[in-house]
Length: 145
Image (tube, rainbow, N blue to C red; front, side, top):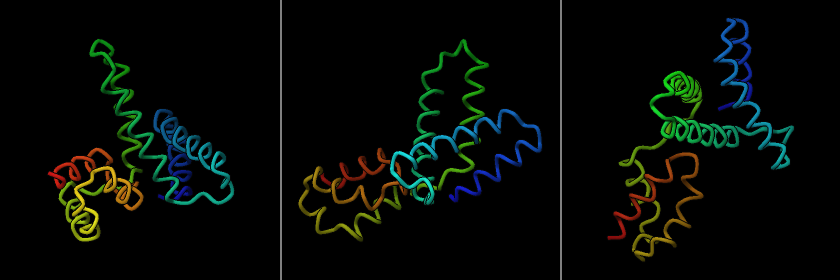
């Protein structure tokens, strides 16, 4: 995801006078800028950084939805709307089957060790931002059996 695309999305929401959508996109932009400053690349924001931050924000909002009590329907609806907006900008993640195929193709030698820690250490840098960590963990555990 390009940072400029996020900014254009926020401008479009502002022109449409959609305050909720603008607020959701604005929170993503703020989070991206904060991480860029923390990592020392404020002037050169890469799409990998944007994708990483979007996935983190998506996970945070998902946790908010899951922990929100059912009595607070209006708050839950607000979180769900925010989740839907962020999800529009989120990169598509690999499915469990794609992860399994990728691991068997690229990491067959490491998988042969059956050492889960060593496998995860080798695999995570390759798949970070491309697949959900829980899915990767489940597939590796399955392959280690």
